[in-house]
Image (cartoon, rainbow, N blue to C red; front, top):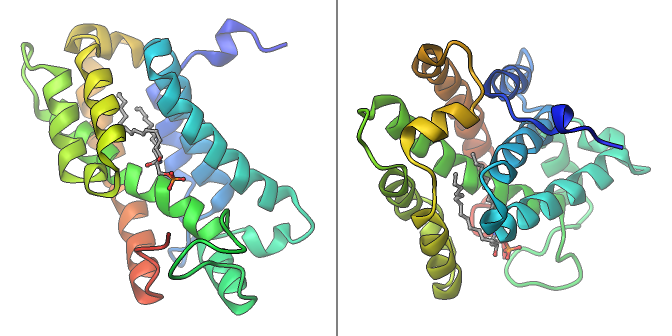
Length: 215
Ligand code: 1PZ
């Protein structure tokens, strides 16, 4: 069984995972990418069950990717670059509308990729925020600048309601489990450029192959 300790989020751990994401020639390791998301889901879960509908979707997408990674063609899924090449070469991606490959690695990762942009924007706001800034506002602003344009009204509405019950900045920093807590801001300063680089590399790859609007 999984103990409470193993479930506990720690920002350092996620930071370390994103550090491992890029190969020497700037490819993205899928294994570490999904591990990073696992860590983030842990964090989300420790914020309360109201975020369950969000973490459920993230977990579902992580699971799809892990299944490819551990499947018989796992060696094609080592990096996001090799995944894209493999799935495109073998016509395993629905390009214009959903069809026979509704759960391709490419379209699944694209959803997480878009969410990574939200994360980057949100963490940057958190990093530069003052003591009395509202996490709900920072979260909503980051969402509106990124993920919102990809979500239908009903999801935007649900997300907006979830943001309203986010804990305040001090409690939020506490859940990040960094000690001493004064380390949160410098640690964010270290994490954000890493996350940003992984995002940019993936964005460039998807743009190059015209995959940014996969259904
Ligand atoms: C700290 C507060 C957390 C706020 C998280 C902000 C993101 C809100 C996202 C709301 C997602 C709602 C549930 C499902 C949405 C899906 O429809 C979409 C599209 O997938 P498709 O339907 O095409 O298969 N899924 C996504 O956009 C992926 C969302 C992943 C969100 C992961 C958030 C992780 C938060 C980490 C917290 C540090």
